[in-house]
Length: 186
Image: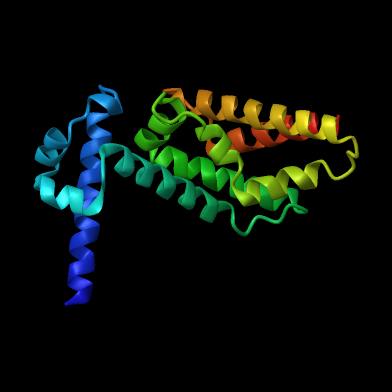
């Protein structure tokens, strides 16, 4: 019985997530009403409020799941093995490409300020950057280099995900890592 209920909860959350993402294609999160969201998802408002306090809570859950999935892609990356890092970053880009609508929404959407910071503060990303900056002892330069590498990489990532014709995840991964590596080594 419990498994059946868990499945029902997962389905409800999935339907709400899908409905919200569809609605966000052409409007802001602020303009999404709970009534419309529930109607689109085919559930009643009481059920919605059983799971979430607002559409912002649902959006945050979508964002958190997205970041969790990316963290899982990077989890086993060995900062000392460039080829392994390249494979893992390509895996993240493949994930973004496979979840294009959510990726574009989170990377471009003004509803998600600070998403770049959250993405690049995933623990494994920090480990990878730290490994690149191991020889830099000037803390001010180190922080500036990290910020530059992070925001430059985010810009490349955003441009890549927004293109209709994209390079392969492997090719884009190689470019991002090469440029971030150059910045970190200089």
